[in-house]
Length: 122
Figure 1 (tube, rainbow, N blue to C red):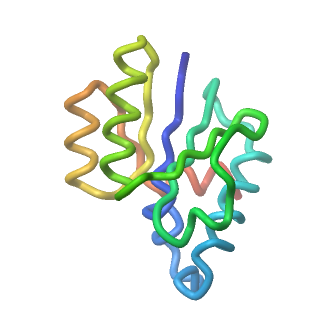
Figure 2 (spheres, rainbow, N blue to C red):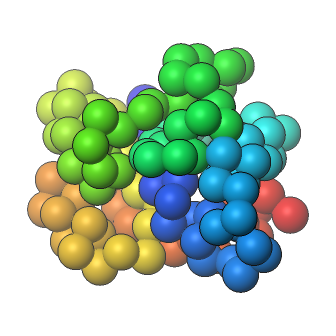
């Protein structure tokens, strides 16, 4: 199983489009774009934290699963990658956070940049 894990805060924050004025709305727009995208993964997991969680309920919507981070998104992503990799899934994490990239790489994930994903959503 190929899983794409999206660091929602990091992807939304990669474009200066006033997302900070409406974090929930920015998360909802990203979620909607992920739903419409034709991505080469069996599952897409969108990880949201803070105010962004109000934009999309936790749970599955077609091929996109939304996870609400109980604390910070990075910890939730590391835990998710650890679980998925342990179950044999091939994980790609979309983030520009270097610390997070190192943590998930050490757990077997491939890391891609927000621009990689956004180019496929446009």
